[in-house]
Length: 308
Ligand code: FPP
Ligand code: MG
Image (cartoon, rainbow, N blue to C red):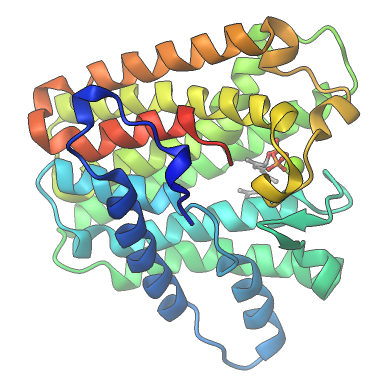
């Protein structure tokens, strides 16, 4: 949920009530997600999928997708199935990331991790189930959108999730663990793929569903690239500065795992500055959209000012 003290709107968007906006959007997304994955036989797998999917979280990815669809002339209804699918994919990546074979984590979103509750076998399958269902859900539930746009969304998302995106980023991340000589280029590669690719897909898919022009999609893509990296820099900072209660997951993990991070390369202050600059570049891309860009501008600032 949104804590008011995390939000410091800049004077430029002071009249946009981000707290209310986020609360409303989170509620819409929660309701849609709850409906999207009902429990059926075999109950165990649906329960495991729902356990992680409905465990809270900021719902940033679906909210970004809805916002970019609306900004480029579409509706919430057009983007909601894709928004839900994005959260399913994000959740599955976290379930697998937390497995003993990867980060071996015990807490996520303030609760025990999926494998700690259901066992490794079911957790792997819950991730697989969510991934497959995400694509089925877009194809079967998207309404009032021309089919060629839906097809484009499926292709963008498939690429963002596979070896060219999330999976590729995770592989380089795992390979880099324990190595102290990781360059900033490798670090950028990891994050542009592991975190950036899906964030970019959220924002670009929103535009595609709305029928945005190629030029608009380019702007959305550059906005997304910048906030994706800013998001990760802030994540690295929070791993050092925030508590487990604030994060809902173990804090201080990067240092413990001897991971090279932005704060370890640049220090906390410089990392904050870099994140701020990226957010400013991101927002500059949205200037031609005028007032309609307010939610995405505010969300970009939220990403750097968040404390969780
Ligand atoms: C969290 O990173 C993990 C990710 C952002 C994605 C990990 C990707 C995979 C496990 C691949 C999943 C497979 C498919 C098919 C998508 P982190 O460990 O740095 O952050 P944390 O502190 O939140 O765990
Ligand atoms: Mg992890």
